[in-house]
Amino acid sequence: MSIEAYEVEEADEQAIEMEWIAQHSEIWSQHRGQWIAVAGEQIVALGDDLLTVWEAAEQVADNPLFFLVPPEPPLVL
Image 1: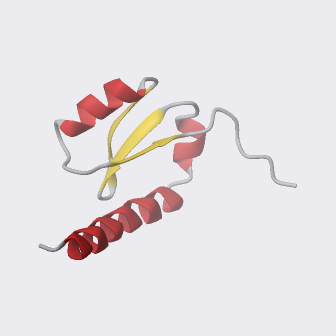
Image 2: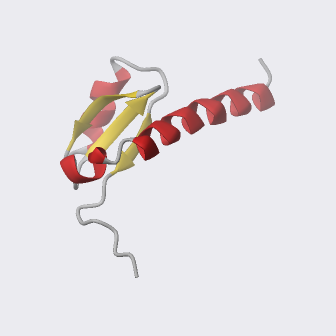
C-alpha cells in the first residue's frame, strides 16, 4: 500500500470516529475532563490519564482516535 493510500484510509477511519463522536452528545456531559479513545463507532478506553487510556486502547484497537473532553462545556456567545 502506498503512503498516499494509507493516509486516505486513515483519514476515512478518523472521519467515521469523529462523526460518531458528533452524534453522541452525551459524551460531553458524562465524561468531562477525561481522555477517550474511540475506534470505529465505540469507546474502547477512557480515563483521566492519557498514557493509561493509550495503553488500554492499544490492547483492543489498531488505530483509535484519542481526545480530551473539556472539563467545562464550551461557552457559546
